[in-house]
Image 1 (spheres, rainbow, N blue to C red):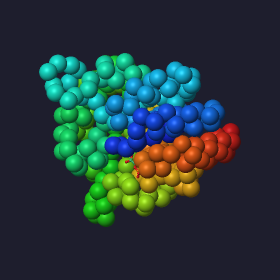
Image 2: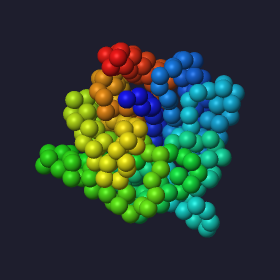
Image 3: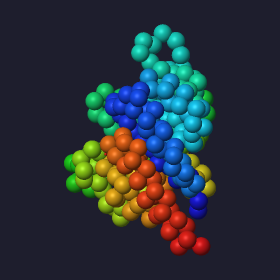
Length: 261
Ligand code: PGA
């Protein structure tokens, strides 16, 4: 099974316009054939990303960290999916745990965001994950099932999707979940998805791991069959460390595909 391997950089509320330009310059210099790279910048930097993108003929795709649940109109502060589309955004995060935690974003909003993105042919990257307490009480499966159900039970349509599994306690903590543990959860997630997507489509949905991924541990995850890429926060901010992480992943994929033949 060959799914798209995605390496997504999530800058969160960090960076600057010069940093976007320097990053893209550095990252673009590295030719990679087997993975797609996506940079999710704070919204104002989509302008610089688009300019630099055409200047460098970059293969790095533009991503966003949020989208309005509304398609347009008098909603102060919101940015619609159609606006993101103008800046060539191809992937957008939905339901990142930081937005769940700090902004109490409700499930209805996540659903509306996903539909709005599909209408603009932008792929939602739905983030799911349990807290440390839920993990300790062995509630991982129940929590993930609930987080998927509250979205897909209430949506009549289906569309392209990326799932990002990010245990909350692994984000920004320097304590990632081991690759073996992540694989076990990803395998369950792929099965769970069959409640809402056709089995064949579930095989095509990339499931990314996120939470303290860096250039040293990144390759471990890609050695497992249900881990199709990573969502990277702090280790994605500098072009050098991001490049090192991508090279490690590319090598791991080569080994994995060689082993599959
Ligand atoms: P981290 O963040 O890599 O800094 O742990 C990951 C994320 O929040 O997507």
